[in-house]
Length: 477
Image (cartoon, rainbow, N blue to C red; front, side):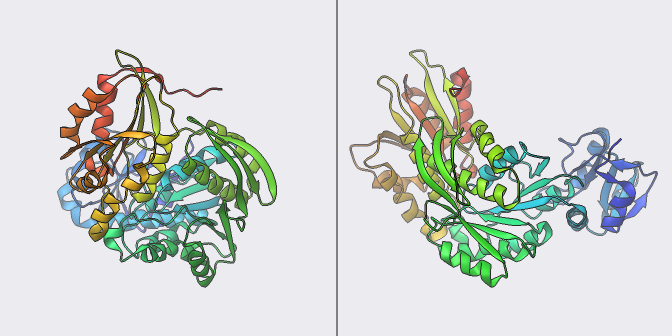
């Protein structure tokens, strides 16, 4: 059997103390007894609200091969007979294992950060690099102080390409994570007003994102969005951090990976790009102008790690939007089908702009309307009222005629919209649900967008339950 880690390597990497009859090795790493697979090592991490040690028995029942536990918790686990590795601190042990995984890897490593598009770009890289070799990437949005070391610890020794998403909402959070990851390519998607409640301005956000440059390998490269107003600032910070090679993507003429032409369709885009001087025409399976920008970044990263760009470009044809990030459903209304665009996973001013552009390029049928269902953008601090009101600029003058709003901050947008736009405002998702369900008609396009904490995914679930799918939203071949 092939192990992710032998027990000897596991113990050595963490400097732990083995107890009991150790297995030969483990097939995976888990921090959640609910998703643990038989043969995994279970790391009993203590979080803000839960302590993994409380789930040790559940982990054993699920088939954990070994438990990694804290010395201080050992007396409380005295009745358990499963093999254990005892460490001073379980999260620190996971970090040590992640560092050991990175040290033994011979693969090419890509790190992705940015104010929007991180997960979408990471998943696109996973897909296109999977067409040319073996790939490992972070699960979901595992991009924080435990998600990054967990993803590293799960990195198989002989994987050819690995992609890590690195997030932050405070200064200083990216630095320790990128120094574990040590990427060959570090990519910043864009700088925008996400987490602005924790920063003075966008320059401060750019400085925090620029921490990613500090972990780049000696011969590595930084990849920047040349269309971003802070591209020059980031370029200078990359150079100051000692990054030897800095490249750009975008429409900007200085871009190494440049968009030449773009035709946006309801369910895909056709683009002409120049990749390091070579012109290519390709089809991007997921719609939206923001997906075009993400695809440019993906192709740039593929080129910089020396993978087959032509094969990767072909794989972009099969790109599809994920749940909560632009996934489409064609749903059955008694009087005719309508389209639901699920953008409920997250929201900030930049991603709101991308989502509204996506809604406005999606055709209605018959007498259908474009309906924007918008919830609060979180973590904007003192800037929140102004930034919510400013969303009116994305709506006025477009084909979106109906807007449904929920959350205390969306009241500012409701007040900013003119009388010729039909507006329904409610306190939150629960109050908005009956209004939305009653308003839907045949041919409509409904786009639901909010920060995750506002719970607008419940509106998506309600529509999927109330109106069965005609089909999974399908694209022409």
